[in-house]
Length: 219
Image (tube, one colour):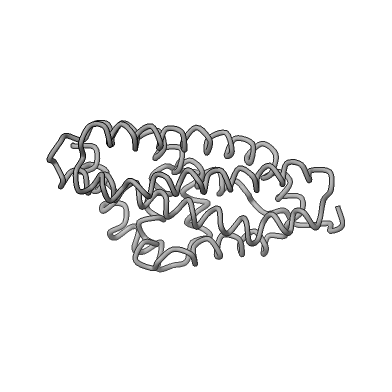
C-alpha cells in the first residue's frame, strides 16, 4: 500500500445503499410473477420499479468502475485478485441487466404469464449474482477502501454516483435509502446530506415513498 490514510472514511453508508438493492431484488421477482394478463396499468407500475432499481444499480456500479477500482488497484497489490473479481462481476451484472431491460417494454404492454415468468427468473438470477457480489464487496472491499481512501475521496465516490442520476430521481433515491436505514443510520446519513435533501425528505420524500410502496405492494 503506497498511501497512508490518517483519517478513515465511514464506509458503512455503502452497506445501506446495498440494502436498497437487496430489498428490491427480494421483492421484484414476486411482483412480476403476480401480474395478471391484461392488467397493463399494474404492469407499468411494476416495470417502472424495476427500471428505477436498474438505473440506481448502474449509477452505483459505473461510479465504482470509474473511480473506486482504479484507486484501489494503484494503492494495494495484496488484494488485486479481489479487485479483478469485482470488475468481472460488474461485467456479468451488466449482461444480466441488459437482458432484463430488453424484456421490460414487452412486459409493460402485455404481461402474459410466460413473459412474466421469464422476467421474474431473470430478476432472480440478477439478484443472486448481485447478492454474492455485494457480500464479497462488504467483507473485502469496504475495509480495503477504508484503509486506502481519504474521507474526501470516499465522499467524491458518492457524489459521482449521485451525479449519474437524473435530478428528478434524487429525492426518490434518497427516500428509498432512508427507508431501509436504521434510526442510527438515518442520523448519520442526515448529518452528511445537503440541507435541501434533508428538508425535502422531511416535507415530502418519506411520505411519497410510503405511498409509492403501498401502491406497488397493493396496500
